[in-house]
Length: 181
Image 1 (cartoon, rainbow, N blue to C red):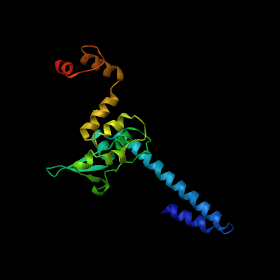
Image 2: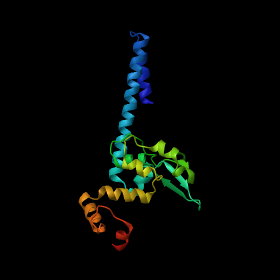
Image 3: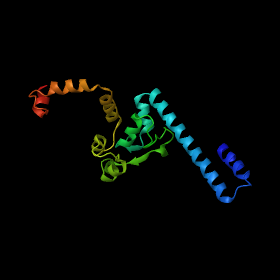
Image 4: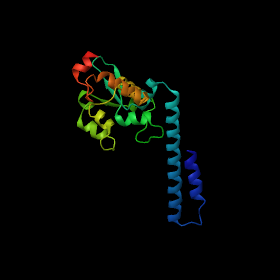
């Protein structure tokens, strides 16, 4: 409201300008106001990532809701949501903000793993591992925690774990090796 008042005052006080100049000034200040709102939202989300627990971060950035067979609401997250949840300053999507039920898109069993959902939520990066994960459907809170643990684990520890399972040292882990370990 204050931005609109400021712009109206500015627009009204430019009597010596012609209409095209007034329109340019108005557009310039409108764009600046939208940029400031975007920056505030980005800062708010960065602060939320730093200060909240994983479950709250998941719920804040999840944009889908599934109602299971027992009638319980289950929040789900796309890969775009996941990327935004772990990347400070990301503007691919923004969190729902835990505001209301209307902020979530309701999905059913068919939607979760559909090609339509995959194409809608695909990240525009060729050969992205995140897109391959999205191919298998939306992420649950358990999936989110698992991916967060992978991101937080140093690569050398992952290499050590892989070597522990790769008994034959052929660079692959097959079912027999996994079961033996």
